[in-house]
Amino acid sequence: MIDVAPLRAARQFLELTIMELWIDYFALGGIQDAKTLAAYLNGDGETSPGDHDAIVQALNEVFIDRGLNHPLDYAMT
Image (cartoon, rainbow, N blue to C red; front, top):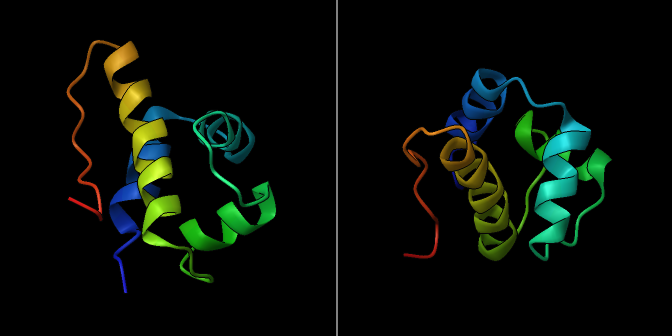
């Protein structure tokens, strides 16, 4: 199982709502709804490695947009 704690911490650090993250994730091809995304980030659900990486990409893009590094690792590297 993939550790979602870094994703949860990144979302909180970036002060993104679930909906803000979901919009970015969905725009990158994520297929889960916002409720499923929230459950996954809370450790109450599962998703595919590809979907996990779409979440990571969405978060990393926000980090980059804010002039920060992209600290999150992808599952499929």
